[in-house]
Length: 472
Image (cartoon, rainbow, N blue to C red; front, top):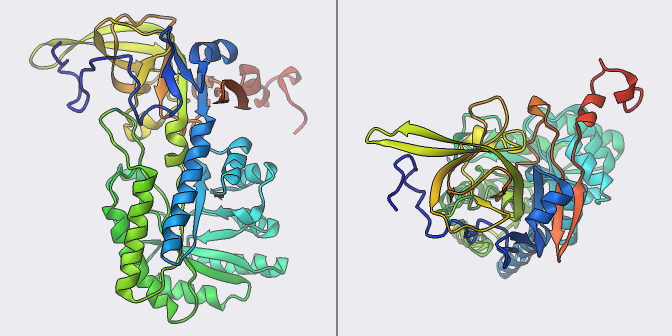
């Protein structure tokens, strides 16, 4: 059939609009003989009936396998170079008590970016020595709390944190290990709001400022300088930016070695994942190989030992393991003048929206969707999956081909929602946030309880006591 001219060039008319694209959907997602999508052996239709929709789902085994593969391969490659390697899970992608435990079980450490994320990890029973604290505007409370609980590392983001950390560590009678976050000046090929290492932005200090600040750190009796930290952005597919950042960082690393030890370097994360079928994301093996080759080559050129290396994947571990399911409601065929002819775009409304996934509104992110409760042999129609919020920008999937017989009551699954969907979710229009359910080995369990409207009302101090959770 001819391509709908409203479709973007990258979106191809599918030969099978039931197929689940490899690399976009979780490892253990497939259709059963009845045409229903299953995750780890459990039907999405049954999950919708049991837990309701919208509903976040995680392929637990996929998450654990990805975490373990990052650790195994990174250690293997850097051990060959005579160095050690550490993988931190970037908790901002999605953090709960269970996720924190999965990461520790897999041998990873965890990065947190607020006192709230720190509290989740500690409440989950995680050894604080296995945690690192990030943030461009850490409060005194966050810094002092981190020091007092014995956090493993604090990533210093600005000069004022040095004196404050020294004061809190001296008061606690401890020595706090720190890294210094620097802006390498490398411009990652990603969305402007996801690029975090160019000069005109809020994170870190410039390469030129770094030597002076490292001297200040080394003058503090209660601070231990571990090394430099860099993060060039997020959702990055190529390695050129990482290679250039490594070159600049190791040049500074060599300079700092003349005045004292610099045991490690942290290369951050930001490794991209495939959200739609035309994208091919780097594999974990490709990521690790590219990083180890760049560090080894540059260290040899500079004539310095290969430092111990840390990385911080988040999305690359948990993003592709996630699926969000919705119930389809109102469907509208909208006629649009494309310039050459009038085309039809089918608007498919679901019972969630930008409150459970704001990424399309924030970053113009694209997603993939499939009918989950059945397969269909009807020809595909160009669809836009939209939410129920009072915003024209409330789009869940901007461009997708779905079977033309999609109807109200179908269950719709959206892939690759494990990262930055639950963690960015809101109660816009007073919609309760959905539950998160982990699925593995034919079993499903809630790992984050969903909210009810009563939960939302209980926080409103202007309502009667029947809604209140207790005196505040």
